[in-house]
Length: 213
Image (cartoon, rainbow, N blue to C red; front, side):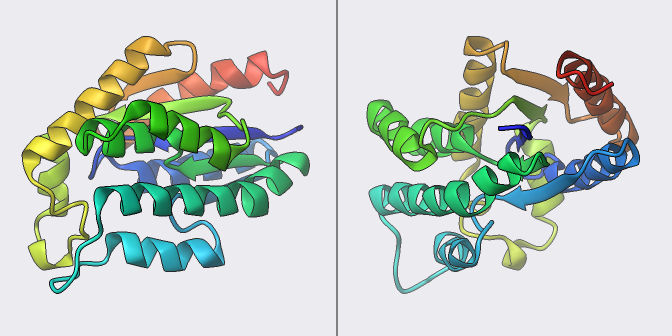
């Protein structure tokens, strides 16, 4: 595959959406075709699954295993319908969440079996791995404060107790320690401009290693 898969990860409110947009604009200024997508919700089917996963429902709940399987289904569709074709076309993909999110949220956050999670990730991706994962590391309290200005607008995951989000953050920290060659930590507590500059510096190094600049 000629393209590159660049993943943006982090807890709620870490600024992924803004940074992906800025990164897309920067890459396109260099003549690199970059597309933005997300999980869940990067396909038509995925948008329906995203609603099921994130919508608040007072009269029914999603079991933890069901949640895990729905995320895997979304990923399987996303990989085949969007990621592989765009990579084959030589495009750079900026993806909001991928397999590390499942490990952090369903593994560390929910406490589900890690071997099952790794197995499902392998099945859903068909072995497709990211070329670079950017972890926007932000204090959990800061990220949630950005989101919780209007509590009624929060989705099902954002409304989880802070202990859950701290476990998710721990998951990301341990992943970054275990895979330093693939996951790059960026301090997400800085200003939007400073964070974007840090991302550009990291990506610049990788672009040169990929023979782009």
